[in-house]
Image (cartoon, one colour):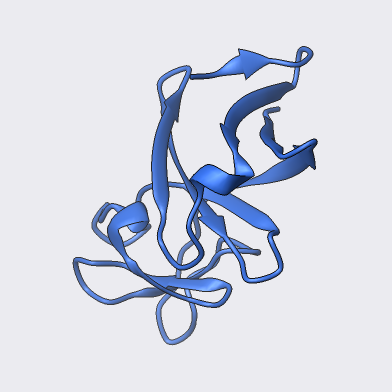
Length: 108
């Protein structure tokens, strides 16, 4: 379920619905995104397609602030959205706010 808090903040989940180390896929306004809950309950959000061949990042293996694309094992920095060298490319990142256990994406 998505809910609009204001023009830019969109409610997407309760924090307790997200598991550390497991990505969650969601679609908002035709955009496919992936959420990743961190050990410290911070949530990072990125476009859900690897810049290499479009692998579904929410299905990848998570290691801290990185996810490994399930197709070709590219390592993506979830905070910056950049592929880790020697690979190149990036995915769009989204700011996330947590308000009273609600997870909100800031869409621009």
